[in-house]
Image (cartoon, rainbow, N blue to C red; front, top):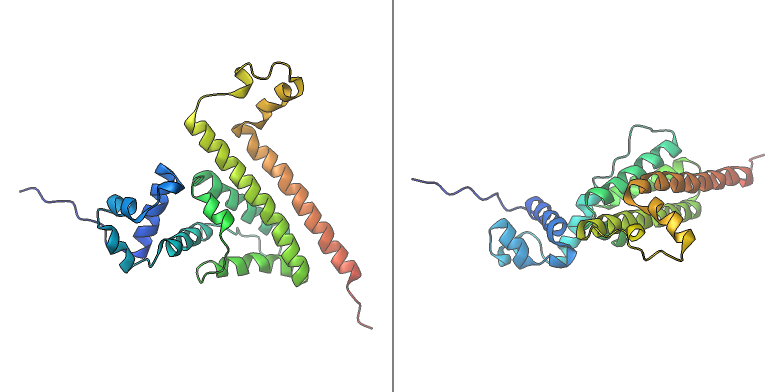
Length: 220
């Protein structure tokens, strides 16, 4: 007698993992309770016993991705810590290009994501920045990382969909500067470009830290 394979126990964790798999396979727009239920082999309504709404599910997916951020083993060296966080963040964008827009767009204001936010902000504070300076530097770095992550994700997505390469299409005839440049914008070159940009951002933060120390009132 053939026994049916046992369905995985339905939990928030299994639902979130299945949701990420669905997004990476079919795209963010494909995420629905019906599609997710089909993937898990359950009725769509049974998902609501574990996840109250789609918005909650999106928060949980964001939290799952956020907890993948690695901080490295560089306590005491703010620059090394931020390098580790930044590279880990971009690695998430490369591994989960279709899910990454959630991480880039949704706020870290849930019980699951606040510990991650606290740990990142603490790096800036330990480096010597006041609250306002921490907020500004965090935003600047975040803008760069999200832009880089979304760019890499879009590039990966484009290469999934087509073998079309602009430099081989003939469309660049008459555009010599673009013709010379476009090959260097391909996916294999993005990692090196990212590292150069990250260095510029961290140099700017280092200048801000130095300026803060110079302008800090000295006790008499």
